[in-house]
Image: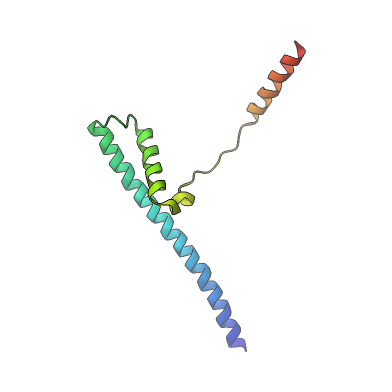
Length: 102
């Protein structure tokens, strides 16, 4: 009986490791494709492509091209959301209070 439970636990650990390896493969695959696409778009920009005007635009274009070609890369290429500053909330409140005072 002890041997059977060990086999089950080994199967579970194998499944977890397979998922991790697939995720890491997908991340590396997406990053490689993205870096290659950025290089291509930068070269086009330097050659004088009228559609691409700046480096940041070339990067944005390559992100959208990769997302369109490989939809599975959406999760691995998402940027982390930043927290909104508290100042913006305060400024909105102060504007409302000024209007009510008038």
